[in-house]
Length: 239
Ligand SMILES: CC(=O)[C@@H](O)[C@H](O)COP(=O)(O)O
Ligand SMILES: NCC(=O)COP(=O)(O)O
Image 1 (tube, rainbow, N blue to C red):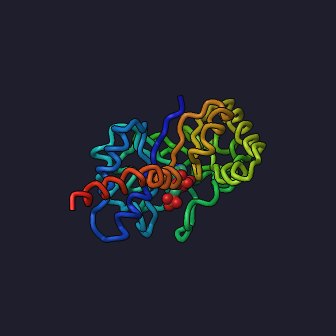
Image 2 (cartoon, protein in one colour):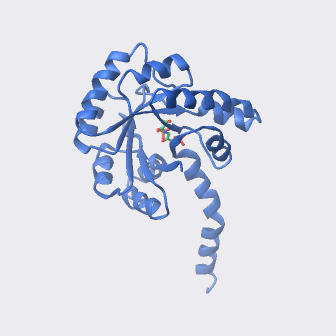
């Protein structure tokens, strides 16, 4: 079965908006695990606008499922991941000022760089995954870097699925078949949601893990609002 890794970036966004420690990222991650998630994902960005580097160290102490750290392997990120030794590092080539991840690796241009850093992570026993588009040449090049897995970048699928274009799954199915032939494990993420996840999982063979954050946290707000509004009303009703 495909594992669900919950990305808690948005919990940190909410916490940072008030400058305090509510919601507490570590507590939320532990609760998410106790609710059944099989992994916790974070994507610290250089400006620490949501997850802070300290959160990564704090989470390492408590996460009992798979801990996945995503990011661009700049020196500060490398140092942190090598010290923490999470279950998995997912390499994402995002620009410092990117609003969110918006492209996969060019594994041909950056083949030797990726080989070098993947070897460093492997020495520390950290599983490696490369964030990538559904391009067969890039997936073939990814297989030569020593990476254990690829993470298929699913924004295009999510956008097209919302427009009713179910054919958008085809490149993902093909990429998964190719990756399996090349000995790569398959993860996926970006804009996956309650609406589009089932069709994706049913049509992408050997899907090991999905990491989901933005939609999952937004859906949790919607699905929890009625309950919480009524809890407030109940507490006010004795007056
Ligand atoms: C790698 C990826 O797909 C991202 O979705 C990412 O981890 C989310 O990052 P933000 O929460 O900063 O948008
Ligand atoms: N790797 C993708 C991820 O962690 C979450 O992406 P999103 O669901 O926030 O778009």
